[in-house]
Image 1: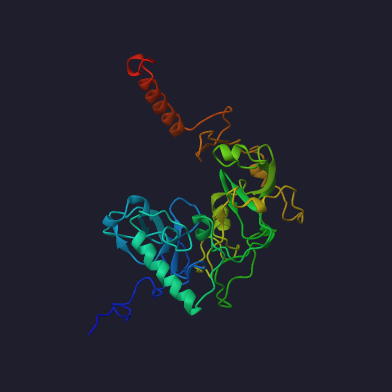
Image 2 (image 1 turned 135 degrees about the horizontal axis):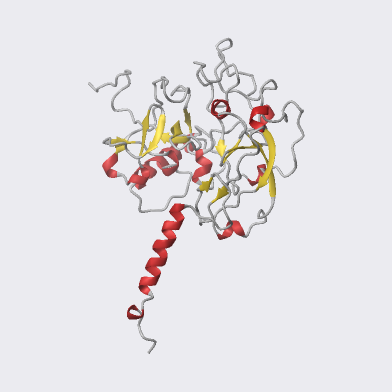
Amino acid sequence: MPGFHWDGSPADEDPLSVPPKHMRMHGAGPKTPRAKASTRCKYCHHIVEWYERFDDKTRIPLVHAEFPSAALPDRYRWSVTSGIAYHGDGGRRFCRIAHPAVCPALRHEPGSPLDDVRRVCAVRTRRWLDAGVFVPAPRPEAEEDVAEQHTEEVCEKRHVVAYTYLRWLAPTTIDQLRCVALAQSTGERCKNLVMTSHLFQGVWEQEDIPIPPGRAGRETLWAGQKMWVYSLNSLDVVEYQRWKDQRCTHHGPGSDASDAATPQWVRFDTWRHAEFITYDEPHMPQAVQRAAHPLLSALGPPPQQTKCAGSDCTNGSAVKEPPGWVCWKCEKRTRERDKTHRKWQKPGDVDPPF
């Protein structure tokens, strides 16, 4: 007689192909039931579970099976605590793996500890394709495309929202952003909009297009150009969190309503989201373009922020710094690099030219 799990499913079922049967919400975490946060990858048809990341970035899809932590390098380990995905195993014997790391629709470099898992996933996807179970989406170009597939219901025109140094890409224009909460009256997704006309909202601001790090970014035509973003810097933390959770005022902070869909924000990337850059000022009703709160306006404009000039660095300063400013991490890295360079340039260490 085969054994059974607590939910009555056979113990010999393949964990990679059986949908999870649990449905719960974490009190201190997101309000999306785990059953609703589980979908199938549109590129390979494998089951993935969506979790909020610990670093406030876009959601991450995890393989719902667990793997021995000792068999995987640190960079592949993920753990879940109170509905939040953290990088690392958290001191546990088993850990989770991000789905983009094993998705067979992506091209992976050979020689990885995940080669066996990737091979099993590829064989299963091929069987599904041969059986006509699903039709895959066009092949993704990068892992970010797999990680952002929760934004399927998007419009052709999308706006960028700014808050401090963060830049978020909305699934639609800001005046059409819909609440993701589950309405108790209908049992379906709420039809209200996140933006309301009776509250003080953000304002449209023009800023420099973020230049991607590296030489390739400096050689693009974006250098020196401006784009329009919807700034939420005039909002308090509670109101900003309502926007981040993609909730209307009725289902805002303090509401116990669960999510009918996952929030569809993604971090703005100049390379991959170039088609959504807004060069002309959006024309919207005056109620949407209303100014910031008078009390906040009396404090003056927000401080000008400075981004680190280091290569491939995303750090920044909350105040204006002189041109060429680098963060303390890049400064430390530069000092160590110069120290190593001077060491090997000592006269005693250099071979004579003859």
